[in-house]
Length: 381
Image (cartoon, rainbow, N blue to C red; front, side):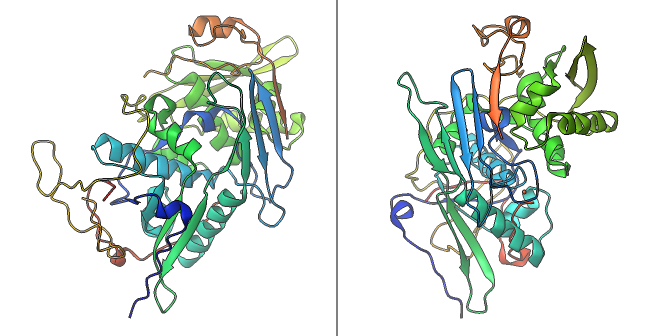
């Protein structure tokens, strides 16, 4: 006999759940997370905080000694959540910060295995995401203020009497959720990103996708500037050595890397190449809805939707049926500070200064036999 433990804590009691119906969704990343140092790039436990300020924006990331800072591999959980939310919005479904899913869905979507070890790693990732504290002034409107949150407000696994994991749920912070439901703040990324094994490689791809985009001339950075932008604990010389080792391998999907020199300055030019990554999605409502109404698709019309079956046996009461031409105010150490967003040309000609100071993901699994998945994600009740 199965034992269900669906907790109705304060936050979840006020939110209707967004139940993920399938893992099929194009990977999407949130722009703010791509251009600023929010995660540790090392697999070793990091306790030292990230303190970063540039272009009038400040980011502070703090870790607790017990768990350490959330890593760039842990961030795959957030990429997956953003992808599912955007896909559901595209299909007209209601979404929520309160996400219900199975570990199998998450792990397979981000290219992980689904064994017991991977399940434990995912729980470690969720723990670090919850315990890492972020303070930032990003997206705070005309009145300067600082927002503080964790990447996951709370999470829980739902288990059977024999200890098997039947499903999971977590609550995303409002800051992240608003940044995902505002489509202008989301970019598609290449699925091959999940196969990148190095922390600097993963971070560099996100920088390339955000800044170089599909611009024919790409984007260029000083090595020292990239070091500051990364929040890495490496010395500048060691970080530069890592970049020199990465360039000959050309590991970034959709981008080519070239080292250039101007006097004593060492520069990295990022150029777009043929890629499967698509441009930014078209706009949707600026803010998603937490209170979902009953929405479902039972039969398919010309759009190609398949008839939906029951999605998760865990919650039987609910069935879920370009061009990047902009820059940002801190994209290069020698890009102009004023009117950066107006044109790429103006951005490349100026000068920016940036300041910054200076692990594997968690995983969990439910066996695929416990899932009944449709072809498209949805959400809401």
